[in-house]
Length: 267
Length: 309
Image 1 (cartoon, chains in turn cyan, yellow):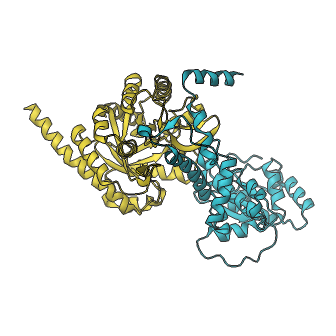
Image 2: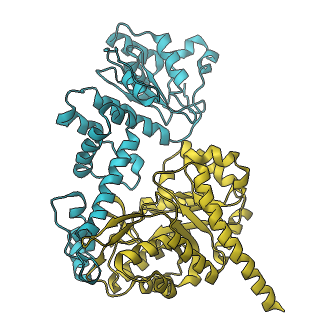
Image 3: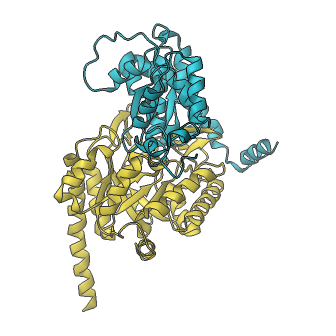
């Protein structure tokens, strides 16, 4: 009950102004707060609307900046209308705006006007992972030649650690192809891909990289990142996905810089 | 200026990561990543400083830190906090304050500032600089918050006056009296945003010159200049919006000239955060501010040398 006591304390102290101010910020149906006014008896409706507009529009713009491919697919008008619903339903809980939008892909999945684009939420998930990788801690990535120096009999016991930027997004749709076509600056032609695609998102240096994982590599990578040694992770992936090819999967991951560099690789 | 210069020098003498660039009397601009290459290629931009919004550098790593590190090597940097919510009644977010302190330690900024405003209530972050009533109770609470920030970062902040669109019925004092009292109680210094003064004066029908006459100019450590947009209030009168998306207005340049004439050169920033132009356009605004600073610097030097005779 401490929170309730401190709120009633603030009422008595004349410190409860946000309580009267905030409900109307995100709710257009809510009247201008009675605690504000214009100068010399002027009305405050249009004046208060400046704050409503600043809050809503700046948060829509934060989503537009974080999800540019999603917006390119839907068009700006559609995107801004969809983002406005999300902003009102789920405003940010952190002052760090690059953390905002984690719930947006799930919102897109539920958004009735987006039902004709069932892959849209997964494209948004790739974009959210891209932003996480962009801001992740800097660290040297395990170089592609790292495993060649190991004796062959030791290889199976190697345990990897994820690079801080590494993210994986699984999709039942060709999410990586759609993402890549709509993040690039060139025109987007007809996309023929129909197969499911899992994305590997990494940032070994300053550029974020997004790749399509080969079949079964999502299972393999998931096992490795949960601490399974290489041989056991490969066994799991082969059992779950007959097309899994160990050599291809390792090359893709090492090229992507998915793992943290030596010093952190354990045997 | 003296206080902040001491802090910058102290940092430099203790194995600092960066050179201690002086910021006195310089004009600067908001730092936008799309300008980085132009700035580094531009010989003429070897004077000046850059200001960044602290929150954009609160991620753990990546291109934002690489860009700021590069800029900080060659230029003085001003760290401008946007969402500490100092003007709100609820306790400051300790994690956020810790991140802010961490950036100051990492980048050794020449200037550190925050706003007289709030942006978080309970757990929601509203991403705007929201206004507060000016009462004895808010004075006490905001003063406590400034004390807490300054104790944590171990240096004074520059507190920025807001642009406002509404007034609170319960306000008991004017903004300048409120700010003056905060300075007296906390020892904070001030970031005078002259565009904000002009916007609020227009919106609330007071004289910007009277505001400046009543404002404690002797505590100002930085000035902000920015562009604004025009709308209408409910009565169809002019309502200015602090939009940061346009060149500085003529009336704001005039006020700036008057302030610098009175105070001497003060580090001055051109803010441009939306509809961001190519680097030469933004740089031209800073060059215009620098010309005014330099003109008055000459006059102030002459006055000093007359006084010595």
